[in-house]
Structure formats: structure tokens, C-alpha cells
Length: 163
Picture (cartoon, rainbow, N blue to C red):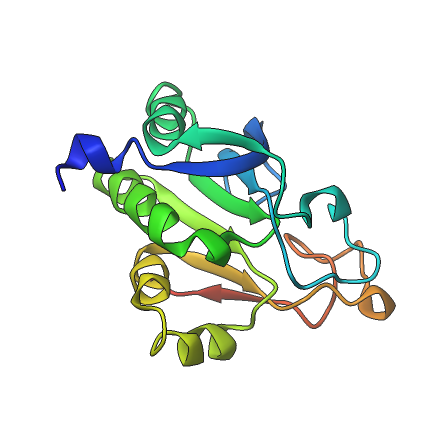
């Protein structure tokens, strides 16, 4: 499939932020995908759990938003659960990396859980290969700590996959 056709693939977005400094290092474009199976008690985005909803958005339009803003350090994938859309986000991630931007991703899965899922879903491997920083693990309300940078609970890890 040609690159232009690939970028016409869509992901359901619950929303986006044009410029954020709290969803990763630097100024970031943030997308929130619709859909999550984790169901964390006290979740900041429970309206994003349903697999129904969100606005189907092309990868090309997301890429255009990132390219259009020279102030951006990169993009952050959040949600919902980004790894539900590993194939599409891996395609987008490759394009984001090609323009020299970095990628942060928030996931309710731990890094080790994601690595174990790679055998059954190679798209997860493709997405992981293009993520610079992964914030992993479910939000645990009893471990909530508002003083932690870039995460909600102390069990979550900030993993720099690329140095």
C-alpha cells in the first residue's frame, strides 16, 4: 500500500490538544484515542473507555497538525488505550519520526506486558520501535500522587525507550 493510502487510515479520537506541556517533555500535540479496556478506578478520562464514539480522524490530518506547528517537540499518544490502535499509530509514528519529532505514549499496559503481546501482534512491536518515551501501567487511585511529573500514580513508570 502506498504511503498516501496508509495515511488515509483513521483512528477514533476522543479529542486532542494543540499545545501541551503536561503530557510529556516539551511542547506536544496530544491525541486521545477512544476506547480502553483497563477501567482504572479514578481514571482521568473514563468517557474514553467506550469503543463506540470518538471522531474518525485520518492519520494525514493528525500529521498535518504536527507539521503545521514549528513549536512542537513532538506528539503524545494517550487515551483511552493507544495500543488498541497499534497498527495505525505505528504508521503515524514513523511519519512523525521522519520529520524529526519525538513520541511519548501513555498506556495502561506495562512495558513487559506489551513486550509479551508482540508475539501475537507485530503492530505492537512496530509502535514500540517508534516510541521515544513510554509512560506505562494502569492508574491506581490509592497510589495517586499529583507531585509526580507526567504520570498520575507512583506505580507508573517513565521509560525512555530511545536515548
